[in-house]
Amino acid sequence: VQKKKNIATYIKQYLQPPIAFLLEEIGIKAEKEGLHAYITGGMIRDLIMERPSEDMDIIIEGDAPSFAAAYAEEKMGTVHIHESFGTATVTLPDQIKVDFSSARTEYYERPASLPTVRHSNIREDLYRRDFTINAMAASICPGTFGDLLDFFKGWEDIKEKTLRVLHNLSYVEDPTRILRGLRFEYRLSFRMDERAERLAKEAGSSIKTLSNSRTINEMKLLFKETDPYFSLERLYELDVLDDFLPHAYWGFRAKEMLEHWAVPLYRESWFHYLLCLYMEKPDLLAKARFLAVSKEQKRFLESFIYLSGLPRSFYMQRLGTIHDALSSCRSEDLEAVSAYFKYALSDYAVSEALLDYQTKRQQLPLLRGTDLIAAGMTPSRDFRHYLFEVEKAALNGEMTTKQEALQFVTGRLQT
Ligand code: CTP
Image 1: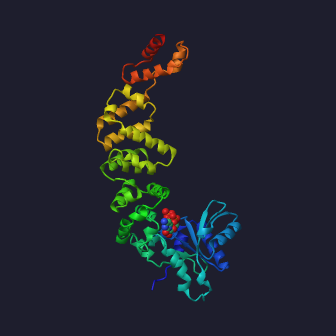
Image 2 (image 1 turned 45 degrees about the vertical axis):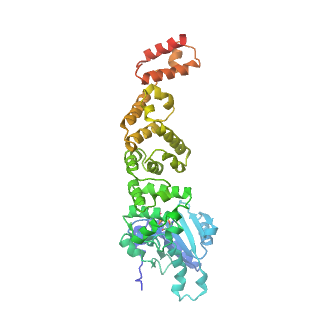
Image 3 (image 1 turned 90 degrees about the vertical axis):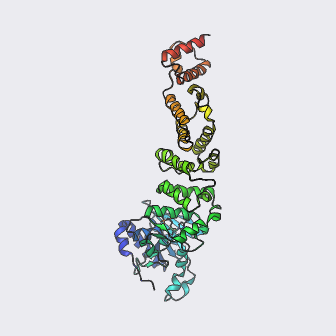
């Protein structure tokens, strides 16, 4: 028989007083209405780990949406109801959010003296969750305030720093739990147990059914809070990397690009981190198009694909010559391709040429249209052409001063 645990002292000690007060208030209201209310999920996990939490997930044994609607009205807050899920989110006037979900109550008619029956619904609710450490609930009603429902040894797993799934279909039901698992591993220094790892390794076909947007959303969360090297290494170990991200390859080139390009230049950018997985061989970058969701990401990736696909002989030409093709490229794109040639292809000469081009281009222009007007010339369409010629000559080192540039253009315009 499970020894009864109570976390009331943790609530008092680790939650901000206004949060603890809100919980008590909700519990009292639930009891008045003949319902029962529990906190659940991350808040309990954090409390047992002696950490603060503001994440109020409340289970109502009863109809959560109507309870939440009445609560919101009382507190002059707003309520957002998801009828089909039996859930509701209340936003209080000070912007604090409280999430409510329903546990079914069919057995309520039975005599109250059957606690196992009474709890069977909430037990079922908790059983459907991701990991045992998140599958506890604690009463917030008066009289039982803080009493912990821990059917699956979540407390023990927290103490042992272990991530255990509740049943064999946990990842099949929701493959993003594997990514959540990695967040918890990193954030809490926990580790999946042998079964959780084995099930992840077997989840390939379920992972492949995930929509692009769900995968990307979870990847965003993952890279927001973990070290990318840790996460990619773990996904590789679990053999699920290319199930989540088709064609992804965590090899030497990806590691080099991550370390020398994505991490130093793009902190916390899931997009740039994941792009590194598509640099193992030429043409692989094109397979990463599904990652580019924003307009800017699409623009960047297309430019990257184009620039990395140009032959090295192109980059080995004089700077003035490559300026024809690269003048409209952003510096950021040139830096990326320079890093790609250096770290992914070990082609230092091209990498240097690109950096040289980019540095010298930043020193342009030697001469502007306004300089030509000031020198008494009438604006014409040819201006732009000759100014570009000046840029090319300057990049080739054939021209270094404004005076030389001016002479060059005046000469051309007069012929
Ligand atoms: N949950 C789940 N499966 C998921 C997402 C969530 O079982 N794919 C459950 C877990 O019990 C979790 C709860 O829903 O504790 C609330 O989810 P969420 O707020 O996303 O996670 P937290 O555990 O609170 O984690 P965090 O500290 O990152 O907010």
